[in-house]
Image 1 (tube, chains in turn yellow, brown):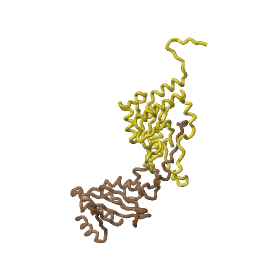
Image 2 (spheres, helix red, strand yellow):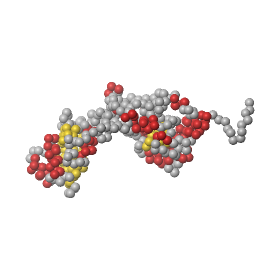
Image 3 (cartoon, chains in turn green, purple):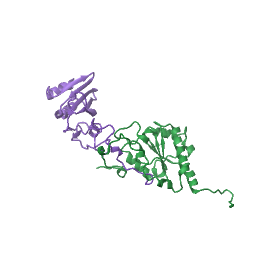
Image 4 (cartoon, chains in turn yellow, red):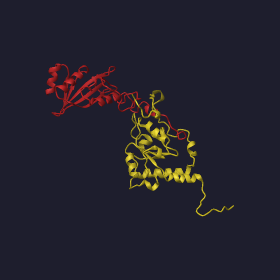
Length: 195
Length: 164
């Protein structure tokens, strides 16, 4: 059955259009806490030029962003802030864990450094390196664009299926539950106002 | 050393011991006299700057008799002379007089020593943790604290993708 379509009109699916638009205008939230942040700046600067992928608009407020780039180590005091910023970002949103420290704690296996942000917030892409070169971060963004184009839906149905913790399994070397000291505090008390 | 003669004349010859390594001069004082010695050094010997205040945990240290050492690094800004004042503390009484009334710079230094070692500075106006979160319950630079912590950093709510 042939349908006559006027000139300059194309037919497509809503999902495809949404994915095409979203993948090519990722606005990063630079959560840069360490040396990865310098590489993130280099990625946005003229030599590597993240604008080629439509992701050059670094916004310093989470309310205007849809891609969080966690660049650098996150310590215990910063994690509630990270969670709060993640919750403040509007849908749809994605997260890149940039570098060894954000992905696994890196060399900082100490009392204060969180061993990977994926234990506490959902992560879509990991960038290896210490710190990663801008090319590696760009590759992560290209991979994330491919992921959005492959799995994205106009109304974010693919996010609703991720109801389980999708981070790594706890390490065998971690503290046993019996020895764990439970300290109060979470993202609802992140600003920690004390008397 | 002029300050050493002054201290001997003030506190008697048995009140403290001294040691020296190259140009590093130390005065080792018992805890009961630490505040008076610091006050004498500041007001009569011209050590007007508290350059450093730190602590050492001597647990598992060979031939150590005391658990903690508190170390004051003083500087005379007129003569550039330096002296290190040490005192030792043992559990369970980890209280030491605060040097805040002598040098205002002792404020954050004492808070840091309290945060990391749990040494209480008696008379400090605002002895809170300075680096670790207020909810933290341990003292991480003590030698009996495990290198990987006691699980405090795993204790945050997990945000799944569907609920965020």
